[in-house]
Length: 318
Figure (cartoon, rainbow, N blue to C red):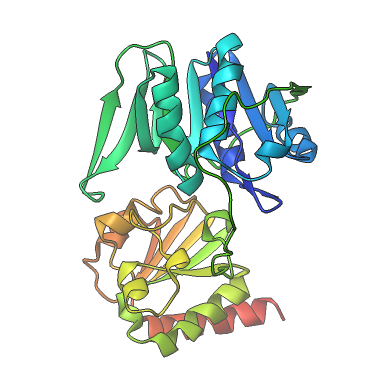
């Protein structure tokens, strides 16, 4: 299969989800190719970077592509795909991708699936996604078609091998004036960390009891070289910012170490961290669901266990 990935970048930075999409493309391409499409103005460096993960990178540069406009991007992609027909087009399930994917689906007359967490291309295209606010996961087989458009949840396909691809620059201009135009980019409030990229995540749950106790988790995370995240009750109480939430209504993480402090392990939260390499849980309730997915568990009060962990880590580090 020819699997195309639409690269995502903004304000001079390449979104890590592009590499994740290429990891997925390489996993499902079979004997075909993984191909990235980089659109923008002066974006050659992105194309060179992505050639490490794609068999081929299509570089399309034009002044009209300086700022993301889904109408223009879809127009350019439609022209590219007219002579290079994709079997599958992957975009991130981000604000960028959620605007672009439906347009591509209509232009290509292709079935679309959004917020996908798994893809099986062994017999047609089958995808997995959560429904009913994450209470159920469904496996769907998309109807047979020449092309498919999938938007993929961030943080799910972080693992993959590098390949040695090539870059081909092509000149394609918009075929029509777009109905919308870029006016201004308003910088959102910047989060301190990106929990989806962290190797060690220390997560606090409702049992942390109060915002002032977050400092205990932060101290432990500092000793481990990790970051602090939270379950939904912690975020809803305003004890941590929204970009630190793990779960179906937050972010999906796959760190090398997930350490849960007083996290009960509700289904919605577990779906956002269950694929972590090592899961360690501390909870005073021996029946807490989190112990069902943890490799190691400590039944105890975090206000007694965590200070002891910090003390032992301090001794190890001298």
